[in-house]
Image 1 (cartoon, rainbow, N blue to C red):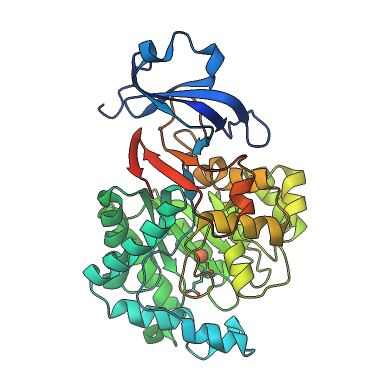
Image 2 (cartoon, rainbow, N blue to C red; image 1 turned 45 degrees about the horizontal axis):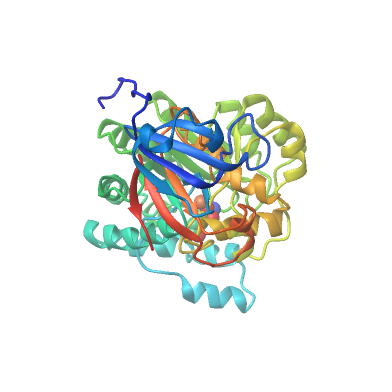
Length: 419
Ligand code: NIG
Ligand code: FE
């Protein structure tokens, strides 16, 4: 099918799944959007039919070229991990030990460790090394049912390394394991050569990094780390506005370690998401609700850093702010390559219901990437990115910790992974 052409969804379909249950996570359904004893037809990589098996318009073998039996299992949308730092070199296991002995993330950052440490390792790594490391982590994510992943740069903070990281993200996409959206995390940490010249670094980002990444088609979005240990709201605003001029979607690491007004900034600039949000105020929640900003919750970082202040989940819920959940996979604050486990952490630490958490890694994760019209739920016309799970009910997906529950991962109607 060529871009712009609409798929022919009339039978005979390419494939039909039945003999099990569906969690549609559809926009207008509540909870998991369960359909017991359901059926789902796929044509030209798109969902052609979803409903109760008994409502199928003809006997299954007349409707599709291939009929697959779910064996009583559950079929759900493919998971969307909408916030990862998948591309990096080295690890920070030494800092893990230091933090266990009492050092804080902020103290380690202040003495030149933390993100700076990964920046040095990443600057020294070749494109091939970065690619192979990221591919390994992408395989791990896919084992957990992920079919779409956002990948950030942000461990280079110079032209060469940032573009190299983004090229790796594009190559990962071409590999076909999952669809990749690439984000230029232009302002993550102030690089050492600009230690005495913050303004100079912001200029480099605005005048060189963003235009180059955009011109080479290497980035879909621009992100910033807005916090006391990173960049001020003014610096972030300047960078995000530059991203906007180049047509990039906007994201913000906001209010993770302190309330710096990141949520309000995201709302004011029309950012697609504000992420972390542990310290977001009521005013921030209200601003996000008015602007339609997605709250991306990252319980892996909360867990690993031993944080105690939780994001204002009850307020997001009351205000109708969509909550996405992602791994934040990175070597420092969230060495977590399993989205189902992130869902468990979101339930335990943040008080999400299993259904809210699951929606956060499907429909709302897709919305965080501007892709909710195309995937994230089982609805006719959407991409047939699907997962078959060996569970008795989808609430088990956030419930079991570290169990391999995925039976099959399907992208665009084709099986791409079986364990
Ligand atoms: O999302 N908060 C800032 N950035 C990352 C951490 C990156 C790192 O520590 O390497 C995060 O948690
Ligand atoms: Fe992050």
